[in-house]
Length: 244
Length: 263
Image 1 (cartoon, each protein chain N blue to C red):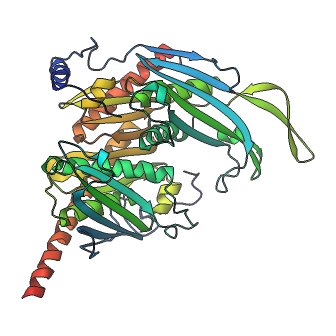
Image 2 (image 1 turned 30 degrees about the vertical axis):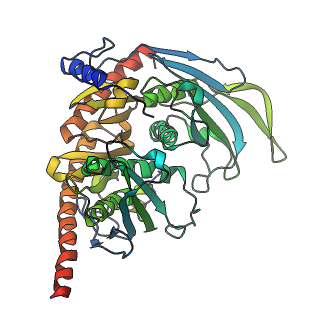
Image 3 (image 1 turned 120 degrees about the vertical axis):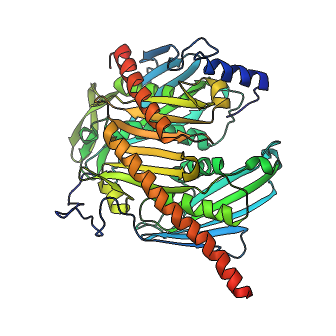
């Protein structure tokens, strides 16, 4: 995070893209975007464009990873080389390996893994274009893809971030705000269980500021949760219309 | 990083925690004994060994001259790497870093970087061309749980012990001179990890507690009681109330450790 050079919030309290401090970017979600996958979802969060696909439950390879009492969840978060300003090498970076781990751990509590012992399920996330808060948008899409695959779940997982820019706590950081701001807090929530399944922070915040940021993300997650449910329903309504 | 733990033992750990006491005799918010030794590897520019109960972590720092990142031409570079060496546990295997070691390295890095612990601008030799690169290599020697806190502590202790070579610029070439100066350190972040077991929070989980925990939350606290890093791990969850409780514990414990180590 570098020093701020220009104002990220203007005199009217609006951000660079005209949003208020507690406003999400525009979100478009499509469930079942890929035909080969058992479940899939596509999300646009501002300029983020992310695809998530689920394959499974299926026989796990390599077999020694299989667990006797539950399903093995495998996650891969990957960014396309053209998704960012400077070309990113397609080889997985340390950041992508860490994010694959935290995304998996944010989804694990939502799935009844014990229903499918000795099997595996693969969740693939491809970031086609990145614009800040990609891990949150990835979780939102991946959770829908799992639901689309018909895997029994305790709840959907919705995620969004908050951060601090120009001494103000704001919701849903975009790329410039993330880079020029002074803190970033990504959070994932299972709203019905009031359960936080992803929580990270970098930057500097006082305890009061953190609590404010956390509450802001929880509200944001509720809004995203509503959109997730709409998107999930929309797929099956359109299937029904085609059949009629 | 899991190995087998019997159901009987799992039950014992949970029942004991329910009564407010842990199997090794600690209270829920007690750390194990912390021992810090500095300057133990002469070849390294800085070094430290931290014992957290039976968990043992060694950190060595090396300083080289390299290029700055294009977006921060006036700043030195910090690189943290973690090796889970196979001699530390039967569950560690030789080979390239796995997700666990990458996570530890990145959480340790986050605490140091975000708290601005090192005055990186003082590591600049020639803007845009030459800066000092600080390599922090975390070596886990014995794994008995809570590697994140032990590694973060050892990394900070090693940095406090790090000396950089004196230099002069001669015809555009950097030449090292006699003598050393102390690495410029501004902050001393401390990371505190709480594990959630059966709905209760316990601080500094040891190995068997880590194996049965639902989730853990590591929080970095800087000298002014601000939060500088956070990482949730494990396949369970926290309620918002538990997150705030873990934060309260982390602030208290960071202050306690700070006093004890005179940081």
